[in-house]
Amino acid sequence: MTDIMKGLLSQRPINALEPGTIVQGTITEICDNIVKVDIGLKAEGLIPANEFSDINAMGIGQPIEVFLEKLENKDGLPIISFDKAEQQKNWALIIENRPEGSVVAGRVKGKIKGGLIVNIGVDAFLPASQIDTQASRDLDQYIGKTYDFKIVKVNRDRHNVIISRRELMEEERQLKRQSLLSTIKVGDIRRGVVKNVTDYGVFVDLDGIDGLLHVTDMAWKRVSHPTEIVSVGEAIDIMVIGIDEERERVSLGLKQTKPNPWEEAARRYPVGSQVKGKVVNLVHYGAFVELEEGVEGLIHTTEMSWIKRVVKPSEILKVGQEVTASVLGIDKENQKVALSLRQLEENPWTMVPRNYPVGAHIRGVVHNVTAYGAFVGLEDGIDGMIHVSDISWTKHVISPAEVLKVGEEVEAVVLEIDVEQQRISLGIKQLKTDPWEQIEMRFPIGKLVTGAIRKITSYGIFIELEDGIDGLVHISQIGEDHVESIKSMFKVGQEATARVIRVDHEERRIGLSIKAAHYNDHKLEAEVQAMDKLQNDQEMNSLNDIFDQFEKMNASAPESEEK
Image (cartoon, rainbow, N blue to C red; front, side):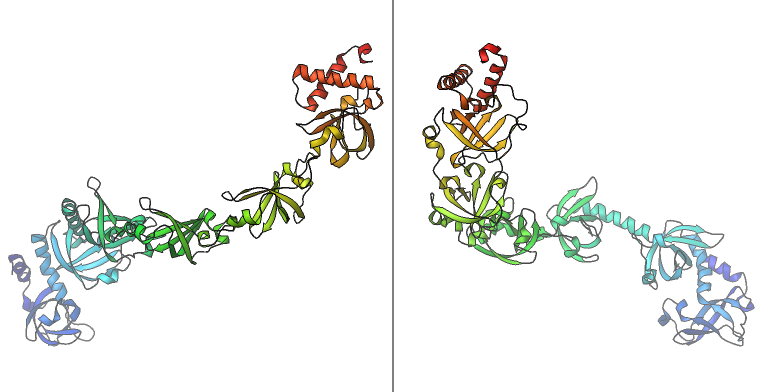
């Protein structure tokens, strides 16, 4: 017993039995929850068993010092406490031997507002923020357990002691961190515990330092979220793949602890082989198929069908579907496998040249009409295209919709086949002989023709002749006088008579003249020669250019010359 303790006991005689003093007693009985103590009064005092750290170490007849709180309660029993006697005696020890910053062992007694009460010889307060390095919502888990604590503050006047477990843990962790950073190296396999999970990865406690395991380093297979692989509190073996000593950061890899499946991928999936897998993801350009854990292949939309133009992969496949595909190629360095569904089927385009030879006449239904042509179905998945320029020999078709309608059955001629590009060119006009081949014989210069007006424009009118051939009457060839408005003089469907004054092979147009319909041969020849001379002098190419220039020439000529 120390001198200070002896001093405390000698301040009041033990046999005085005064409340507020430490008195001597003897254990007379030990029950499950109560220890009975005789302190020399008529009745024995009762001490709860939980005031003793080890009730089994106590024995009947053992002398014991207790704190006398009251001589008797309402039942006539003295109120005594072993714990308070120990705390009074231990205050002297705390003040003498346990300064602030020292480490003591203590047992957690219970909860109070803001933290825990810990018996370190005296009752000390452990704030909730100082219990652990991470906040804990369940304080009950610490009750009854013994830990080491650091004395943070001692208030002698109020007999208050504040302690911290967290500071000790952080100091210990810092020492472990320094030790770990001095010994750890890239390639080490370490045991760690998953501490925290985020969307981009998990933090693993390596007993001294937290390392980051990024989601891309968790498995060789596709991982959508870290919780697919690990959970908080799980112990895992993990590889060190990067160390930043200056920032005290460690990068970890879980997949690196297992063989890379891509090392053997080329051998297991040779080009041309058939493989089975499960669709794991659909993107706008194709579908990813898992062949094994960590190895995925891509089926591009162009490799899904020979005959169908796949816009969305979901038209053909769905996630979770089991598929069989053919290996087109493998890129080990970039970890890519190209797969195909259509290669497992016969390419119907290989039979197209035999089934639809060039020059063959076919019949089909118009499936689609675009600005440049119309698509005609020949068989399931195989269409031929009629370009706008192959619709008519004679009519100037601006849009295929003027002539062809979706759902209409048409006859056409096969013009060209490109198996590699999967294209068939068709033509409707080729069903007939090109009327322009003998145009000069059918419409010689000077011939008088009659036909219905098919179209009226600002620069002239088009008269439909034989076989649908159009003849253009330029505004300059309508009358001798200047014409302000053509539409005020003619109507569509009205018949008109004119003479052929020019034939343009390149533009497939015939130039007509209404005013020359009444010319004699001499005057007609003069008109034609004037136009020929104009073209030769100015190197004009189109019929419209010649007519336009001819109009300007006539408009600027003197009145006597015009007549």
